[in-house]
Image (tube, rainbow, N blue to C red; front, side, top):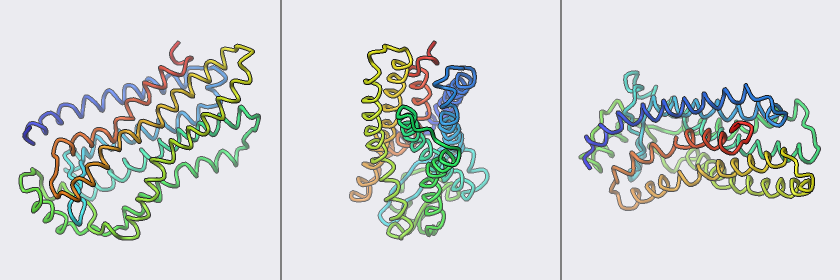
Length: 296
């Protein structure tokens, strides 16, 4: 498939995808505010945090529409979104916002697990504790964004290497940004944090899921609808936590494949640009399906 054909498809698919995501998120927000079930009233602020982060992710993803091109000594990000009209620096800042918001959303889902466990354990959280937890949820994303911002980015070197390794690629120099020091402390630090969030987050969610399941089974004899609602919601949250890790597997595979073979897989690069923001569509659907009061 030629790049011209891929770009033609992207130009149609991205707006449709973004509109569908925004509609799904808007529907979920309506259900969050409209539903007065006690279980959801106490969790409203946590669900709103996830929604807000994912709305930022899809908007910034649509504005940039960038794909990653790992080179030998640099990493380039080529944008085809409307941000290119404002310059590559604007694209870079919006891209940082996309990465940060997607990481916040992932961490925020685990935060819901933690909150539900505390409530079921009859451990009420004070306002300072809730505020502290919200700060913790946002810290890894802020740290990684700062690391990417301060990392050396020699534009000419990135463009030249990308041109040399991928002469058939279609892009304008002003639509490209990236990183030219892949072994810098900033890159190593952000990579470590990203790996921890991506792979240990689902592990933490599964641990809390098992703890919550044990507590819920203690109340099984009451056969309460609230217990069924809680179990259904926890199942949905578990799937939501696992999805980002699955979506990032092709991206990681692409990075190492290109680094060692020095050949790009064009269709995979464009495909991965969708996978990164795919959870913004799947998560609201899962919430509506698995949170029984929403479904009703």
